[in-house]
Image (cartoon, rainbow, N blue to C red):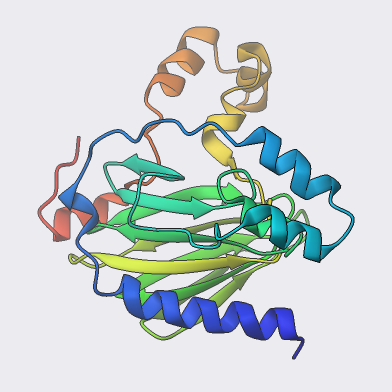
Length: 236
């Protein structure tokens, strides 16, 4: 095992232990302020001649607080907190990034891809139904993972994680790229020209496409109807 992979695994496990003791994702729904990247520092780090120069430029800025407001995305199903090169410049040149997901009962991290990274997703608490679809010609892969297990999503694969239980659950996702990127499938598909979306859906008219677009939820969302009924959650 390479040193970088070993270091990432240690970080995953340490953070997972801490994350498992945090509060429910339903505890807060306040909108997070948009954070502007420190473009001057990012430029300095990206153009530094050596790792020594990068470390010196960072000073003591080597800690990311997953309990804070940076990198937060919230929806009815919980929240995710992402540390990437954009909001945590200490990652630049180190080839890693991380997201912690706090999903409420039946919460789902909607189907998405990471165009520049493979994801190694560790279940810190609870249990998830997770699946991915790699590309044309492959079959859909479904897995069920519980606390202490991990699942890998290959770079570029469409994948999701859903909490199928009626209690909160936490995952910790490590990436082998400081800028993994994220592309949420439904929202980006419906971001295409309306006529193209309609044609892709068998000739759906513009009005119907616009109605569907308006129904797209924020991520993370509430998951399947079966889970919501079982847990006594709203079906709206």
